[in-house]
Image 1 (cartoon, rainbow, N blue to C red):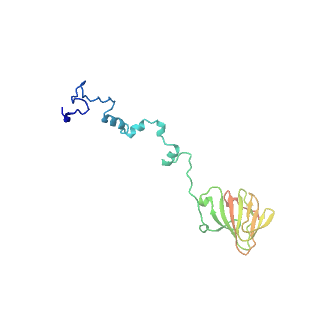
Image 2: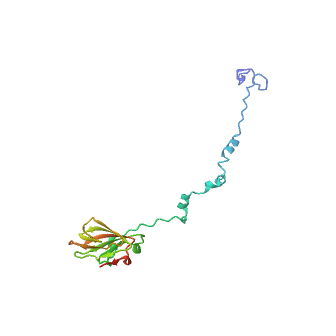
Image 3: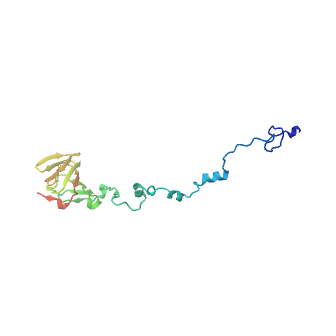
Length: 205
């Protein structure tokens, strides 16, 4: 046998019959799956339709929680009151009128006009040398806050001076009046709770 006929595995002969010299060592047996079987097994779940996978979930997990229902529902849930729009007024939009006590009033916020609920806010103006008529509000608590000018407040049996920055509480049923003692208009913020009403104004003079 020539050098070109040397067996590829180092044996004495190139005959690969079993049990004879030159037979290559058998490859170890391995439990390999064919590639197409591996690929099919690996991708079988990925190819399953999404709705089939969702069907396997417990029914409770498919229900949106309460917050999600509120955000996506077109109809508010029962018992939930939607937030009311903010109310904003400007003084120049409030027309002045003369109230029962003789002062010039601008209703800055009032349920009958603006839709708020439990109180009213007005600006009262008393010209120099003038005073409001003494009166009471049987149901209403009222606050006076002086914005501008000098005045003299009569509250039941008490009489005292008021100036810008002063606030006076007038309990329900308490007779009161205010007089302008300065040379400019006396301007006062008047807050009433419940809201001001002509029917709840009783003149005592």
